[in-house]
Amino acid sequence: NKCIHSSHDFSDMVFIDNYIFNKDVHIQFNSTVGEYVVYTEHGVHNAQQWNNNPGQLQSERAEVERYCKH
Image (cartoon, rainbow, N blue to C red; front, side, top):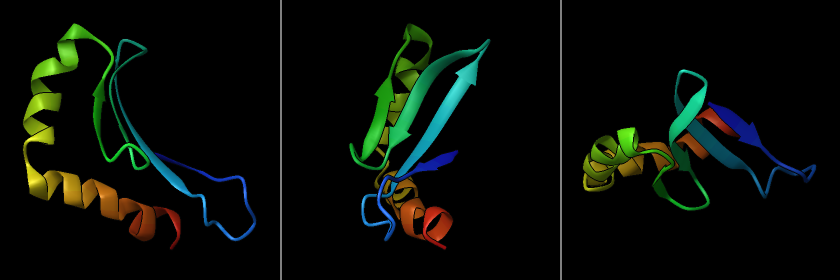
């Protein structure tokens, strides 16, 4: 997990959650996009399940406030 920002007031804060295997990013959640993005064939199944789970998406979207801005 990581938080990225370029302003001093953190108004442009972005939460990134990467799922990595063998040094390759398979799936990434980006709070700006608001859903999981797939980068490899291996991540397709999990990303589809997670994107279809409103609770999972809501939890990840809330991480900007809970994890980054806290």
